[in-house]
Image (tube, rainbow, N blue to C red; front, side):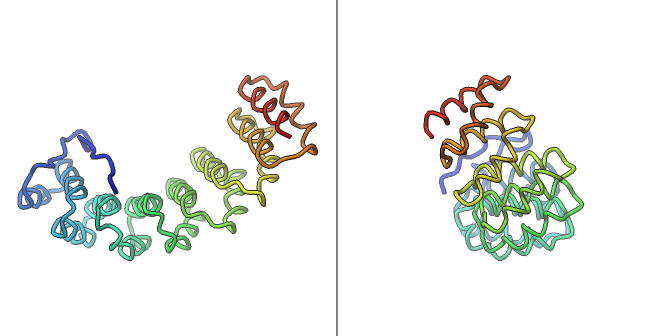
Length: 233
């Protein structure tokens, strides 16, 4: 993967030009310089750099484990760490688990689906949100009802917002009508636009009446999307 290399990490320049032994020395003390060193290792495609990151996943300090997972997810050899990343869902630190969710999303690790899906029932709103973000990338059709329920009922605003994006990016001929019904009267204009877009892509003349109503929506983007959908159907 040719991913962009961040110039700084948490405000610290990433030491890409440092020797491997220098990077090891930066890791001795936890802190911004150590986390920047992890990013330098992430973009150094050698097996030695990869090995250092693997070592860090067993650190007693959750901060090293989190930084190592973040780095492994973009390392050229990161695909070899799939089992390590999947095992992180048992980590006692929610920060490490969230990093694992981000890694699963970036690497599209479908084998972690069960662990990710299980986080939807977490008491931690940030973990639920991270899981919803990962499910967007490793989606299974059976996820639909649970994610729709999160959109409707999750008490955390960010989790509801992410559930909407996850649903929008996994709309299909099988589920789009439920999304249309959920979004056509939603107070957020973006969701009403999405309802129109779904009708444009999948709908037919049966959806003429609700679309006609949306052509008089108070939001101009919604009106435009509704007119476009009506033209299409």
